[in-house]
Length: 148
Image (cartoon, one colour):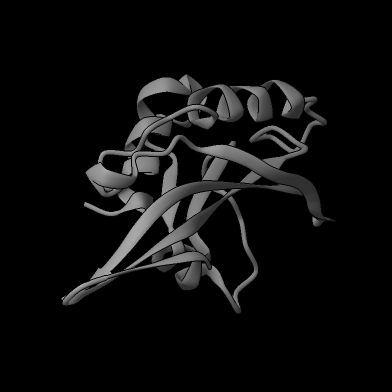
């Protein structure tokens, strides 16, 4: 498994409004360049983010370095219902649900020797366009990179 698949499974299990509505970078890539029409709202995508190197730990015959793996959760919500009427979805409640599911989470795919818990890095409004609000949350978790 990967950190992305760990986060997808966690969101689908713990955020009821996202059950069956979580995709990955590949799913988002299929929508890019087209006019996006959300079939379901809310919807989110989990994207791999930055990998930031931290302290190197040289040991005989191997290379070890602590790294911070980041993952982005991009939330998209329609501002209208299926019939075109104005809808007032609670974006803040969804953001809080995602934060509750992930902050403090220990992804199983992280190296056992570097068990870290996910922390919120930042959240920000990305876009409001064509009746769709897009918000991104970035999380990070400490991991360890090893080379033989």
